[in-house]
Amino acid sequence: SSYAVLEGQYTLHETIGTGGFAKVKLGTHVLTGDKVAIKIMDKRLLGEDLPRVKLEIEALKELSHQHICKLYQKIEIENKIFLILEYCPGGELFDYIVERDRLEEKEARVFFRQIVSAVAYIHNKGYAHRDLKPENLLLDDEQNLKLIDFGLCARPKGGMETHLETCCGSPAYAAPELISGQEYLGNEADIWSLGVLLFALLCGYLPFDDDNVSTLYKKIQNGEYECPFWLSQKSKQLLHRLLQVNPKHRITVTELLTDPWLMEGFTEPVLWKNPFKTSKLDEECLIELSMYYGKPRTVIVEEIMQRNFTYISATYSLLLQRKAKGQRIRLESDT
Ligand SMILES: COc1cccc(Nc2ncc(-c3ccc(C(=O)NCC(=O)Nc4ccccc4)cc3)c(OCC3CCNCC3)n2)c1
Image 1 (cartoon, helix red, strand yellow):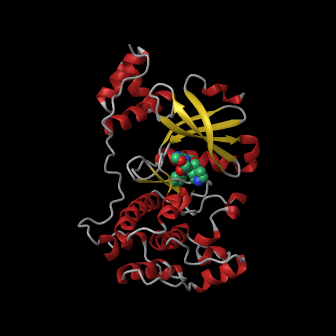
Image 2 (cartoon, helix red, strand yellow; image 1 turned 60 degrees about the horizontal axis):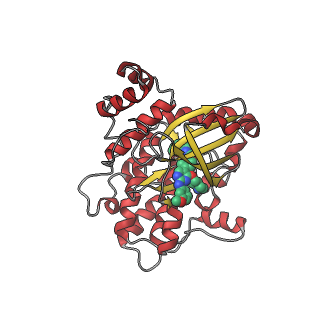
Image 3 (cartoon, protein in one colour; image 1 turned 90 degrees about the vertical axis):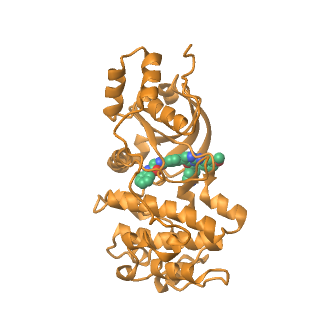
């Protein structure tokens, strides 16, 4: 099968997600035994959207943030593209909220600060996500959120429109200007979706909901929603600033970083720059790789710095993550 290309690098397990033209399988990285998510796309099914997928992969290579799912490796053969991605053992935020009915303000605030940090980071990189919803926010093994773009909706400002654009985003989270087919700015639409997301975190249900899609659209365009009794004054004020029908009246992501509700119990505004961005590579991991492969350290450094997202750079990233969690970093059959 065309999975032969993964032989010896990854073992494939069950499918953990399917989308229009992609499916995600659970995988194991052979050398470390770590779990990964393997997104498999068929180039023939992608058709005219293939250039967009390539853009998305180039974008993902640039995105390095503690609350965005990491790309480890890209494997392309004649009909398939495999993306080896960070696996989040905690599953979707959607299920986490459903299991608890709704979250207390304190917990919702910690999560929301992480989401705002990730969104501010991608906006600063010139991207809009355009499909922010609990299904695209995953939990890692330390209860941290990782933003993903499962449906390939994120795109650079003024990027190319394709039919994928139309199917993008889920109506319940879509901004009024987006569903009325007007010209809209991805960043402003993302801020609206953050409002819907915050409401879902604090209430456990959606602010705008209806079985009939055109009624749902009317509710969104009127921007009318009811706040349940348990919401605090500050959270209602923030929701009001996020869920402004007129995008020009909506809070900006910069104002959001120091919003009073987000600051409650915190002294620091939300930080969106990647604090761990060190150009320095980790010596211990480099040595482990160079010993395992019997290649000089400089060759390993070269391969990682070229950012070709190969098996060696994937193994380096996984060793680095293991080290950050205090796990041992010995590679299998490294006797
Ligand atoms: C334990 O039970 C469970 C249960 C469920 C899940 C897990 N874990 C688990 N870990 C990792 C994944 C994953 C990561 C990244 C991408 C991706 O497409 N990245 C590309 C990307 O994010 N670009 C991008 C990001 C930000 C800005 C711009 C571009 C795709 C999938 C996963 O998928 C399963 C799907 C299922 C349907 N809903 C969405 C998740 N699932 C575990």
